[in-house]
Amino acid sequence: MGSSYGQIFRITTFGESHGKAIGVIIDGCPAGLEIDEAFIQSELVRRKPGQSRITTHRREDDEFKILSGVFEGRATGTPIAMVIHNADQRSKDYSHIADKYRPSHADFTYQEKYGLRDYRGGGRSSARETAARVAAGAVAKLFLKQKGIDVQAWVSQVGPLKLEKDYQALDLSQTESNMVRCPDADMAEKMIGLIDETRKNRDTIGGVVSAVITGVPVGLGEPVFDKLHAELGKAMLGINAVKGFEYGSGFDGVEMYGSQHNDIIRKEGEQVKTDTNHSGGIQGGISNGEDIYFRVAFKPVATIMQDQDSINEGGEAVKVSGKGRHDPCVVPRAVPIVDAMAALVIADFYLRNKSVKL
Image 1 (cartoon, rainbow, N blue to C red):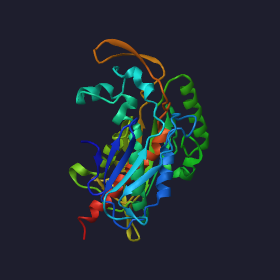
Image 2: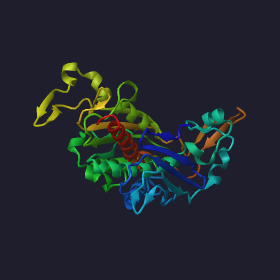
Image 3: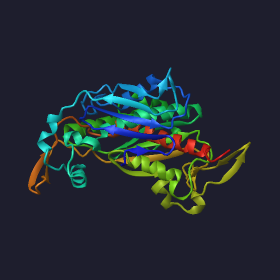
Image 4: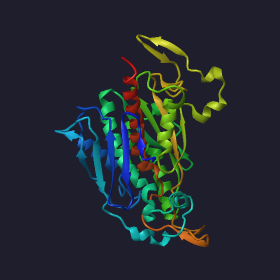
């Protein structure tokens, strides 16, 4: 339960942080889609650990293998299975918390729900699982590219350092030009400095990943419970360490009057456009053809290299200190995960929409 997402373009992920492998099964990928393995690998490289001094030092190449569903470079329409073998596990780094609950981790809740837990790196609750989502999201991106739909995410905030520029004023092609994945060079330098300082203090810090989806046709989304923004929110809130999601004007919209917030509609040639886009490209839960933009808030990584008070499985007071290799700030590596989950949502809704329209 809880390891699958999507209705038509549907994925199921499997594996644990320190198990033999992680992987994903994609069902519903349209037959004939060209599967660009180099592109999938490049997306995994963006997420992999050990890529810079401001990320975890765990070393994983995250090389994937396709086990089924692809023949002569194209999807056959049957389930695509992909696996990524774990190579750099250090399970001994977690032996000290075998019977202890780390603050703000899933240790206690998993133990209570299942009666047992894989304490090695958090097992199934580890962000290691998101590599499988990135692999699946890369396939979704290949599908969306054919339809002229593009997803781009970037780091817009680290701690109190916030990029105030509107996304339309940014050169998003510069996102991958620095290790923090902020498209503004000056702000990126400041963010890197703050993460470095945080790491040296044996602490962690949170941040925000922003994203925009362009080229989305009118009509994606369903009434009432399957609204497009609700599914995007679910997809983002299902990513490890996410604490908040807002789209369009978001919480800033509460400070506006309706006369300021309403997006005036006009006809431009054969297209219906809006003068503003406070709606974030979605109205009534259905895409209106404008850019869909949103923000995702990530908490500070829960594992810190400091002593903290907690309890063990027997309810006794204990001290817990982080060991091993962990990100001082998760957002640089979260960018491709946000990309992937957004692509999976849009691909699924695109195919769902085709099933109800002649």
